[in-house]
Length: 479
Ligand code: UDX
Image (cartoon, rainbow, N blue to C red):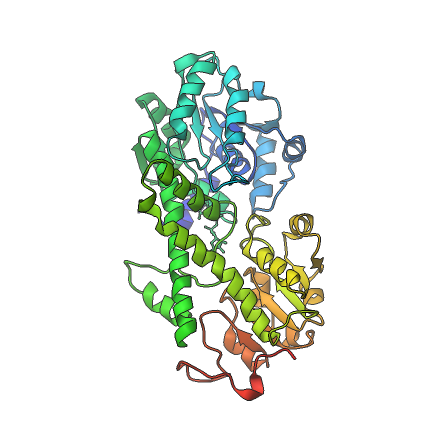
């Protein structure tokens, strides 16, 4: 059994293996850059390759082009060892033992299917370089059956022919915890077609395996499916508790108490049972859609039909959050100054892909509210994608003069803020806690009208008995 914190430390402090492998990492986004840096830390010689010149220049100069806690510092340390380099030149991949495919597989603009164009383009550039025995290991999330097709392509187009093997080695890292998840994963999944492929992946991850990380060795299709199944399960768990929040809203029950009670059952557990605005990001939403689409193609759409409801519940959270804010504005958002705290799809990330916070901000803006957004790390990304919104430079500037504050991404900075100090800055003390992350009692005690989806609207000190009628002196209206 691993002891989490000591294992993480021991891997970070590990002296490099004397005989590291030679690796290439194709695609240097959140996944690829993290993988390249962490593999260099394990003692391997790594070249990170990407078609994006700016990204490569930045990484080669030791500047992370995105935010991930601790990764920038580790990147610079690894560059200094000489074991890590970055280039746009695919010929630098030549002769490597393993080539990791880490390019994005976003949702297609015209359908729920995954867009595999970046994966195909990466392999098209890589294959001509493969003139020695090697392994190409896919890490991206792909529809089941993709690896089989890529194997055929590889064998046809690599000069090494069938000596260039394909494996699938899905990645489970969470943004914001990318280093820890890469160096101390819950499990390693090796989708392999030969002992040789297994041996190479085992050599690559040897320090992690020595630390007790379990390895599941399986075929290519199962390895692809593990990722889709894991993300679907996580999404389902989040939507399950948010579905319960809908029931709570209709009955006056309290979803936080419910989640706590459920979490004490070991069979259920409390992780990914946090109610609120729901999931976003570059993985969960598009993965459940592409999985559903692929299952339909395979003739087993019914088996995962429930994922459409999981998606629908998740989307409803966004509209319900807008509804709650509208309720606070007495049914009319026109001209109401609403401050949105958070833009990233979750804290400790600057990623705004399918970010619930920005989706809500966009809907509020469309409904006529004067929306000001603040996020500790995602401001540049948000500004680029939503130029119609107003942005503030600090938390204090963002809330000054606000009539309604909406906490939509639970950054620590927001959760630690003093309700009394914030209260002195706003025009009206109305707050919607979209993430159940604030101390409701502390806000109410500081004179705020605190609201959260799935929890009854209580006065300070009020016994949590539901349903609680909204008292006249605290109607929740901003006006
Ligand atoms: C996810 C998977 O966790 C990871 O294993 C996979 O490899 C990539 O996709 P990530 O997208 O980085 O990782 O974030 P995650 O921590 O899973 O959160 C996803 C979303 O769910 C966030 O928007 C988060 O706010 C939301 N969430 C999470 C909830 O709404 N409630 C919860 O209880 C947990």
